[in-house]
Image (cartoon, rainbow, N blue to C red):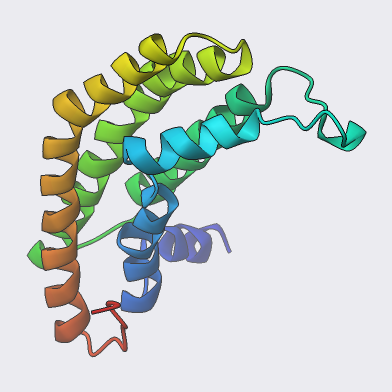
Amino acid sequence: MSASLFFTACQAPSPENFFGKVVLNTNLIADFAPDRFGKRLEQETVEFADIPASKNAGDEAQKSVDIKIQTVEKALKDINALNVSDDDAKALKEKSIALFEKVLPVYKNEYTAYAKLCDTKGSAEEKQALLQKIQHDYMPGIDKTFDEVYVLGKAYAEKHNLNVNWGN
């Protein structure tokens, strides 16, 4: 029985399962860009004087970033655990790992700092400076890696006859 468990654990995933974890899971970070995620974090802290239920605890944006960090870490763990044997799958797996590893420190550092500013009603200048830093320092490399994952993903999907709607 333990031999069969070992064999099952070492088997390569089905093309559909593999594709889901390395390509479709990138949807988890599709809102990474500062204009999208920054706006989302800002909206987490909005309160309305005439709506008591909108009163915040003061850590809503930080909680959002923490959830995003946990989600990215789980995706990375799942991708790293995949056993692949062919070169196409290895390249796609490596590129997907690279993408998640690029965004994770930004969530942990810049977006965490931004969330704290949102929760504490920090200055617009400080918040804007953080978003500009993300846009300038990280987005070019992240966009490039995103594109590379999709190019490899499209080739993989075609090779394995996966029915994928790329939203084009």
